Amino acid sequence: MDNLVIGGKGFIGSHLLQRFEADCIDLKDGQDAKRINELRRFKPKTIIHLGANLSPISDIDIQMHRTVLEFAKECDAHVIYTSSMAIHEPDNLYAVQKLYGEVLFKDYGILRLCNVFGEGGHGIVDIIKNAKGTIEINGNGEQTRDFISVEDVVDAIIKAVDISWRGIAEIGTGDSLSINELLNRLGCFDYEYVNKSVGIRHSESEINNDFPWKNMRGLE
Image (cartoon, rainbow, N blue to C red; front, side, top):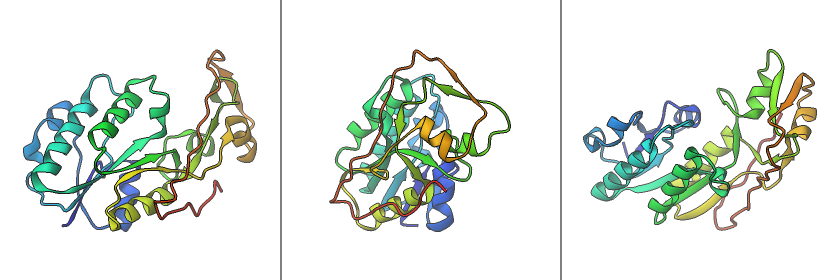
């Protein structure tokens, strides 16, 4: 096929492949990440790079990014790389490796995702919606986030592929809610605050008017 999804078995990738025709591969560990032969059986025109480890304990994603970049150059494919708003506060290995990916893929298309929620998700919205008991909230709940539906994210990825997007677009609503506001909106009352020393952190996307997309769905 013309399109190759890396990370197609993950949360966003599984939603994407329900609506988008593409080959798919998962570079799921350090050994695979360095084996470019895993990719050479494909001949894509566009690579959608969703691959990431949410809790990496090494430079595994950096190795994966390098492999994908080498392959893209080898087959002259365009890349749509999904980054994260976490790069604005790179205080953990996940965020650092996402930021490193932005450096590597700076000549291609970068979609910097806000807090994505939806079926199969693992963010705070999905934790609240699927809660069976008391939820632990890091900090005082006043930290803000921009929450975006996975279906809106899929729309953005498909648009980026269609127009061979180059540059950076932050994929969010442009608005933000505090965690406390989110709890109230979703009707969650069974929670407790932990790690109260965690500072207030803000996350709100800046809309790039050059990227022809906007969100269509809300939290409900």
